[in-house]
Image 1: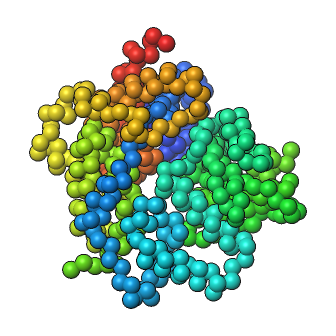
Image 2: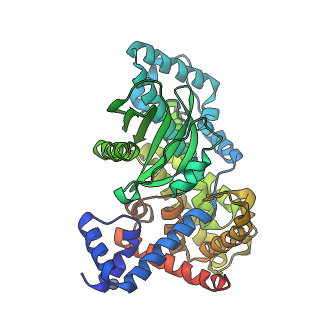
Image 3: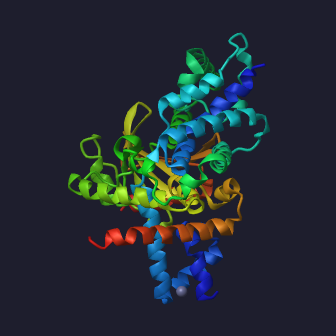
Length: 265
Length: 182
Ligand SMILES: [Zn+2]
C-alpha cells in the first residue's frame, strides 16, 4: 500500500478498527515513515484528549420521570407467571437505579421473588452464585457509566489508588503489549467482600477483573458462561481472581493465562 | 390501549440509554435546555416505533432516533443558529456541575491547568461542524464502533473513518493557537 493510502487508514488504526492484515501493513509502514508516525501521534493524542477531558452530559433525573409519565409502566400484578426468564435476558438484578425506580416496588419485589425462587430450584453452587453476581456487577458498571473510580492506563497510578480503601493490595499489571489495555480501577462488592475491580479493554470489549483475598489453596482457571457473558476465575497466592467480559471465551482464557503467568513471578 | 408488556420492555431496553441519548443531544444542540426537549420528543417517538424494533442494539437504535429528530428540528428552526461557529449558549454551560469528568488522576495541582484545557477542548469540539462533531461524540464519548456509527448516521464505514480523521485534525487546528503558550 502507498503512503497516501496508509495515511487514510490511520484513524481506523488508532481506533483498532482495522483487520489483522491491514493493521500489520500499517504497523510496518509506520516504522519507516516519520510523516505517518506524526499523523498517528496526532490522531491518537486528540482521541485521548477528547475521551478524557470533555464533558459527558448525564440526563437530569426529572427527564426520565417526565418521559415515564407518558409511558406508564403498568404491570399486571395478578399475572406474575407472564414474567419468564428468557424475555429479560440481561436485566436480572442489574437494571440501573433509574429503571428500578420506574418499575416500582411491586415489580421489584416480584423480580426478587422470582429470582430467588430460581436460585433455590437450581441449587446453585457457590461458584454459580458468584458468577451471576460478578456478571451483574460487570453489566451494572457499564450501564451506570461507572466503569472506573480511577481512570489510568498506568499501573503505578492505579495500584496506589487502592491504598487505604482495601485491606489488601491487588496486583496491578498493564497488559497493553499483549492487547489487553488497563483502563483503571474501581471499588466493588462481591460475595460479601469489598473487592478491587480492575478494568481492562480488549478492543471494544471491557473486562472487569475482580480481586479479593482467599483462604483456600490455589485453584486452576475455570470458565463459566451465563447470559451471554464469560467468566474465568482462579485462585493463586491467596487471592481470588474473577474476570468477566462479553469478549470471546478464548480471549478471556488468554487474558487469564497471561495474567497468571505475570502475577506468579 | 396500553400494552404493559411493551411498556415494560421499553423501560428495560431503551430507558437505560437515556444518558447516552442526552449526551448526544447536548452535543448536537449545544444547549442543555434544547437537549432535554429533544430527548423527550425522541424517546416518545421511539416508544411509538418500538414495535418495529427487533434488533439487539437498543442504544444505537435510540441514538438514531435522537439524531433524526434533531435533524428534523434543526432544518425547521435552527439552521442559522447552528451555522455560527461559536455558540454562546453552549459556552454558558457550566461544565463543573453539568458533567462527569473523566479525570485521569486527582492531583489538585494540575486541576486548574486542566480546567483550562478542558474548557478549550469543550469549546473546540462544540465548534466543529455538525458532521464531524456527531461522529466524534459517538466514537470518543459513546465508544461506539465504526459499524454502529455508520448505521446511526447512515453513511459507509469508510466515511466514518475519514470524518473522524478530519474531525480530529480540525480540532487539533482549533486548539493549536491555545497550546502554543504552554
Ligand atoms: Zn507514510
